[in-house]
Length: 307
Length: 330
Image (spheres, rainbow over the protein chains, first blue to last red):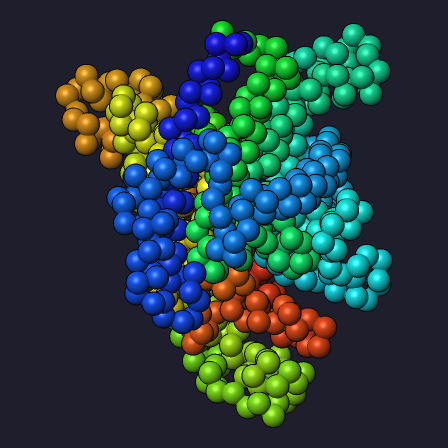
């Protein structure tokens, strides 16, 4: 197990470098951070030249990248163009998005898996067809449309929740945004669980468990679920990174000042240090979540043993 | 399938695995595994004495599937209006009459007017072209690039496979919307092509993984060994023996991905980096209307409904094709 973890960690290094370099390249090479710093006004050439030198923008890209990564591993993410250290922005934004992601994942687990198990065991019945149709509809409507419609419905018309989230973003205000963020994945989790459960209900070990007289509840929870949830756990694990990155749309609708909000602002204003800093952390989260998923495999499926 | 394998036929035993069900933004990956081991045989078996192929069997199934027929009709209709929008809408989608801004439906204008007093019905008809172009071109690009790279990696293995797997890991590590914002925010071209290019750039690893998985399974079959023993070259084996059998999961995932690309275009337009006016697109109209939902819900309803119906049609088509290609469900 230990050796496996180390090997996986080593394999993560090239992927980490590749992903961060790709974003670094897009932000620094395709855009012009100095022009962005000055907004609409044309910068004074001498000042621009000095800033370019200060930010090492005249060095070749790989050298800038190495410098930047070196600083990051010393905990220095640079300074955003408004003078705030990026670490400060990270510290204020990440807890909010993590809370939002937790709400979304809880929705996926509770509603998605429950619906999936129910429909998977009643394949072909009206509840199955209905739930499947619902998942298809949810997937076909763009998230931002659902977001605005639910915000209007629950926030403005029915006044059940506040239509936008306060800056501190406590859990209870994140329920609706969390649901909106989770919806598409929720549909996937439902369908994935359904397929997996439907396949496993016909498995020999389920028949054995029923034949030896186990109560139905125990068959479902201990035997059927444990085996059917393996692909679902994979999906939810890889989804953590996607949810945090995909929160851009949800955070914009509900005015949540999390990672997505900061990234959106950063990208539109070509605020390179902010964008690269936030993306670096996102990529790390994504890779670690994937590693965690692989290790969870061994817990869920005893046939898998990592040397 | 009950028919015996015809030894004189091409002997295409379709073993089409889902391969790596790599997250991404598709609906098929999740169930692509159910495409495992699709036995089918023979090339185009139009003659009655020849055994039917996987594809002709699937086609027979599809013709009887109402979901397939409905979604195919919707898609044909869409293609029609994106080619000849003028047939169904006589007005100009760009003609604006500010005095009628946000007005509801009236005679001759069934869907009402938008923010700038343009006819919503006309814009919904004309908007199909941009959405369909993005979806079709992005899917074609992703499928061609992804299956070529993934297929070659699966077939030859070795260092090329290792490098390709790492590269696709890199692209998987970047969330789609985030990548879209970064990549497209620096491009000022307002046509559909930057959006299509971006989707191909970030979408190919998904197809590549699936193609790689199915080629790896297909190449282990006896008929591939037999073809090699008979002296067939790599090119012939790949094109004549492996490709037809590894294609099924790629087509299924591609069809469903087409719908999600159309939806993604709307999201990118909403974030201000997708298509831009004067291009007429559902995505632009939906994002303009979504902030006006309190005043004029009809502005949101029609383009969003058209877009969702389109996405739904492609997803259902992909589902139906998958079911038809999956003999376990027969």
